[in-house]
Amino acid sequence: MEVERSNKRPMIIMLIGVSILFLGIFGYKFYDGMRGMQQMQHQSQVVTVSTAKAVMTTWPSEVIAVGSLRTVLGVDITTELAGMIKTIYFKPGTMVKEGDVLVQLNADAENGQLESYKADAALAKITYTRNQAQYAVKAISKQTLDNNEYNFRSLEGKVIEQTATVAKKTLKAPFSGRLGINYVNPGQYLNVGDKVVTLQTLDPIFVDFLVPQQMISQLKIDQEITISSDAYPKKIFKGKISTIEPKADQNTRNVKVEATIENPENLLLPGMFAEVNVDTGDPKRYLTLPQSAISFNPYGDVVFLVKEGKDKKLTVSQSFVVAGEKRGDQVAILDGVKEGETVVSSGQVKLKNNSAIKVNNKVVPSDNPHPDLPNEY
Image 1 (cartoon, rainbow, N blue to C red):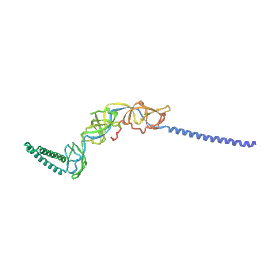
Image 2 (spheres, rainbow, N blue to C red):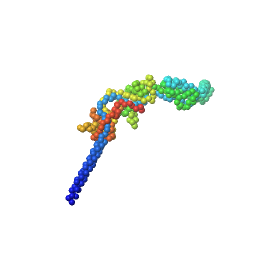
Image 3 (spheres, helix red, strand yellow):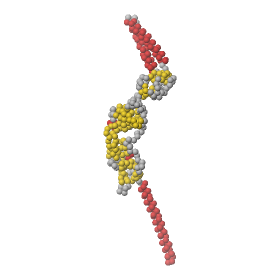
Image 4 (spheres, one colour):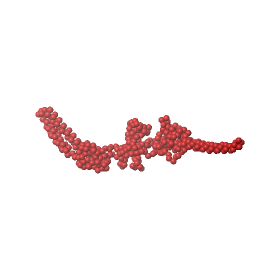
């Protein structure tokens, strides 16, 4: 019995040792896995963001808007009466004066009818004049004389009416301006309303633009403005505000403004896009941030301030701000952020108070107070 016990003891010791070894190996693997999961969880909580600093910026006191050019006088020449084109007198693209004949329609029939009415009216006048003398000596009745006068006046009216009809067969320039492309040819039958040519006055020219209601108090009639067009990027055109719409749009709360622009070289054309600049006073300094840094919410406007801990790790804290005027990509901050403080400019969606962050400013949102304005109006 003692021999058997002595043989089993080394086996038990070996089994216990092997068990301890396996437990150690599994314990280490479990610990290593848990530590890896913690590291991955910690890393997943770090949000990559871009940042910007709150800085003082000088903004010119000006109103910047986009507008559309519109002619003071402009029309597509058409005809009131249909007819065959007999003669075209104008040359496309040239300047014409008010009253210049542009197109003559065939009016032979109308002229013939006019001469007939003139002859009838002349005869009626002779009859009426002669009967006036006869009525004076009581040779005819008053009713006969009245009938003669009626006939004479009626024929005079027909002469006037037919004269106007003949005149409508001659298309004239209603005002001075520049002609466009010719859309008709001699011998072509012209229907009522068919376009013949466009006529536009180019000097001066209007520019229409919209301003928010909060800026309308800075504008007034005869205030000087300047405009620029991408057609002439190095040229500035001057003008004055001529009309301010006496109502605001109920949907956008914008007010339409019209300005008259000098265009002596006829460079600006109706329908072109223009950038409008109205100088309203001395420059002002504001604490500014990129607009992308502000989270605009119904309960208040929020930014995330960047804080550096003792371990050099970066976190964020939420701060309510009071935003002021916007200018391009920038917004003025009236309260909630101090000069020099760093805020998150993009990537705020995943953030909350005390979130850990990593900064990557290789690509940052635009922060330009004067960006290129879109070609829309």
